[in-house]
Structure formats: structure tokens, C-alpha cells
Length: 229
Length: 408
Image (tube, rainbow over all chains, first blue to last red; front, side, top):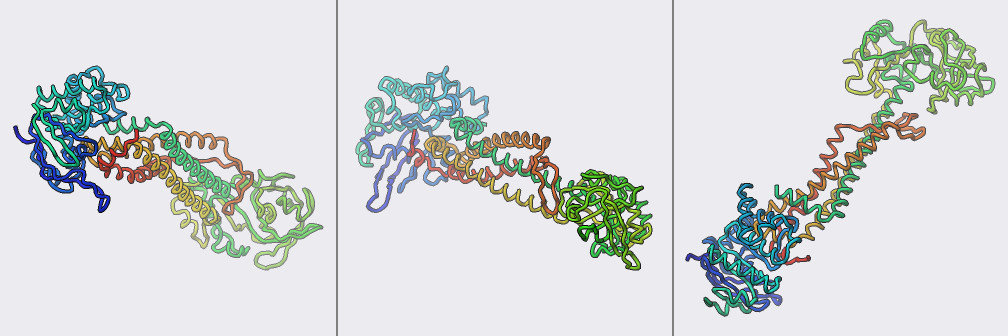
């Protein structure tokens, strides 16, 4: 399996002088295609910062990140936008759907950003809604969906463009355990059946138990990295 | 297309703010349309009043006659000028006048006035003197001993209809003084102070006789078929009738105050327009900024999932354009409706003096089709220009920073 992500000695520091905080310190790691990896650790350990750095949402103070063979720290703002659009699927803790767009339109938005032909978009959206078990809910607005259903739409939005990796920041944090478990089963299925690569940041035991690899962060540093399968 | 859809749906998320912005744009445009229509109406009314009351569309005199009103400066080649005027298709009618200073004496008082000799039949087609008679009768060519005076002058001289007045004037060529007895045939009221107190009319033939000028005249006053546009006057009118040592003057030369007053009014409209547009732009920018800050987290998500900077700016500009378009439609609808109603019923100011012209009739606002196109384009450009700043803010958003500002 080839490397999807290569993180080399990255650090991220916020603030200056006495207020300086090292959110991530000299982290190096590699994620291979098809992995189902969780980065765990207590609050403030730097999980979300690391995910933001990997996704190009934030820029490391030091070190370099290679995603799909490209060094993202050298990219401009628009290049990063295009890169995220084409290579990264993002799932957030709070579902983060666009409230004025329906479930189907939220998914379609990514395809339209990629300038996919409208007819093809409809077909892809319909098929992805089926994958996440929401084939009848496409016309509903986020407010008309339950938390679990919204997060499924978020998963569908993240995978619709067939990205190299899906980065999920505490995706089950706002869900009850049964719904969270269902969602994880669905993502696990996508990983096993379709070979999608997932990288989670979490402190949810359910995710840690299902992860094939568990990286523990503490005070911004990797303290453990082990295969759990 | 999706950006348009996003724009429309986002606007309807906060109806109160949307209504406020739409109302701001529509009131701005409505006010400007009404102001412009009113200024147009006043301008037209000023020109109409100036032309119809007494001055006519244009006048022909001997060169420099108006400098000193020298009674020996007659119109040269009168028959040829009259012949030419009759052949002009754009000229509706014309009349001849004599003009001289004189003293009017009544048993109680003496006043210095301008005495006009007029042809009552043709004067009717040019001025409003016949309609302004409030007492007695308008002049009749067959009754040459009658004099028509203004209401204020009648009060100054303390005379009424049929009372006697002696006209004293200096005759042409000899300079001898001539005195002639007239009876007041009628009293007029034009509601123009100068005219009601400082002029008097007798018949043309009588005036020619007492001035000792034969069949000569001092003034030809003409009225064109069209009030005021590019085709009002015949081609080369002024050059053509300024020959034979005469001079042709249009209403713009005769009453220069009108054009100045119109220019000042138009300039004021533009200044007012700029102020209105600036206010509208501030209100719309404020609404857009509020909307941007309220949806900061959402914009962060859009950025995070791959929306480019330019597309972020497009979202803001699209929303602004939709709000502005709705406001423009409403503003046009209101502006056209209100102006249309007042263009029929008119706005009565009573009697108002402006640019040397007394407006007697109500003012009828006149909408300019050109302005109905220009003003909405202006307001659209202003509003979009005002939205560029928030659009740049949206384009420069850092997804991480934006997503930190979660307020849902």
C-alpha cells in the first residue's frame, strides 16, 4: 500500500513569547492507503490541530506534510482549496452541513465545485445517498434530519468526490452511542469494502476499538502509535 | 447556479434584514426618481410659464434694441422677416409689438412704465394677457383709445375701468413730447409683480401713431410648435433672423435665469443622488456584514470543503445583487406609480418665483425614461461596489479561524 499522508517533524505554535503554546510538537507519521486510523488523546492534546494541519486548513510552523505525494505547505490558498476539494473528505464534529441546501444539494455542492456535469452529479448523489442509507431523504434540509442522519450526509459529502483520505474530527461526539455505533459501522464498511482511507481524531472509545491503528497524542506529541488489528 | 441558489436561500433566512435592505434600496431609488421627476416638472413649468406668459419662444429686435430700448431702433426689413417667418413650419404664430418708456398720469398719481403696442388678435396666440384680464375688456383694434393696465398699476394710479389716463412719451426722430388721453379698457392680473405694476398695453396702430414711427415695430414675438427640445427652432434660426442688422433671441437668451435655475436644480439632484446612494450603500453593506459575521462558521465550512476565494466573494456579491435587484424593482414600481399619479393631478405650490419666472400653474412631475434606466444602474453599481469590501473579507477568511467562531 502506498503512502497517502507523510507528516515530517511538524510543529504548530500559537501566540508569542510568554503566551506561546505548542499545540503540536515534532510529529512525524505516515498514513497508508486503506488505513482506518484514530488519533486519540485528552482534550488539548493537539488532535484537531494535527487534523487541521494535515487537511491544509492550518499551516505548520515547522516541518512538512505530503498528501498524495504533494507538499501542501507550499500551496497557495486557492491551490489548497482545490486540493482539499479533490483529495480530502472532511467530516466535522457538528455535522456542518449548509443549512439552506438540502441533503442532496450539500453533497452535490462538492461535485459542482469540481465542475462535474449536472446530470452526472445527480447520478452520483443518488448513488452515494444509497450508500449512506438516506436514499429517501435527499430533499430534506439539514434541520429536517436527525443528528445521525446529518452526520451520514456529512460522510456522503466527504466521500462523494472519491478523495484520497477522509479526515473525521470527532464525528461521533454529538451523537448518542447507538447512532454513533451505526455511523462507525457504515464508515468501517466503506473502509473494508471500498478501500476508503479514514483518519479520525477522537476520544470516543468506540472509534478507538474499531480503529486498525491507534495513535496517542499527549501535549502535542505522539506518545504511542500501534496497530490494533 | 448553485451560488445563485445559495444566495437566494440565504437571503430568505433572515427576512427582517432582507426587508430592511430591500426597503433601503427602494426608498433611495424612489426618492431619486421622485426628486428627478419634480425637478423635470419644475423645469418644464418654468419654461412653459416663461414662454406662454409673455416672452414667447423667441423674439426678434433691431440689433442692440434691448440695451437701451431706443425707439428709433426698429426691426429692419420687416416685411421680409415676416414673410420668412410665415414660411417656417416649426413656428406656430408670431405677433408684432412696439415698446417704449412712458409716463402714465392719473388725477391722483404718476407712474413710469413700459408701454407696449400690440395687435390684440395675434397677441392672443402668443401671450396670456387676454386671459389675465380681471376687469373690463381685452384690447380691440377698433377701439384705439383704450389702455390695458396691470392690477397693481391701477392701484398705484388709483384708477378703475373707464377712468382717464394720460400717456406722455417722447416721439421718434424729433424727440418731441407727445401726450395722449386714454381710457382704462381693462385691468389684468398675471401674478407677476413686475408685469402687474410696470407695463401697459395699447393697440399697435395707436402706438405707432403716437410714437411717430409709421408702420415700424420694435419686436416680433414668436411661438414655436414644440415647447423645448432639439427640434424646437428651425435650422439656423438665430443666424438666419439675426441678419439685416436685427437680432434673434430665444427664451434662453431672454431669460437666462431659467437655464441657470434648471442647471442648479439638476446639479442638486445629482448631489442628492450621491448622498442617497451612499446611505443605501452603507445600509446594504451593514446588512451584508452582519450576515457574514452571523454565518462565519458556515463560511468556514464552505472554505474547508474546497470553495475558492473568488467563489466565496461571489456568494456575497450574489446575495447583494439579489437584494439590490429586489429593491430596485420595488423602488421603480413605487417611483413610477407615485410620479404618474402626481403627473396627472399636479402639485400646487400657489404662486412661486424661480429663476426670474413666476410659476402660476401646478407643477406636474415628469419622469425621464433615460433616468429610469440610469438611476437603477447607478444604485446597482454603488451597492455592488459597497459589497466588495465584505466580499473581500469572505474571500480572505481562514477556514480554521472562521470555524472557531461558532455561534449556532
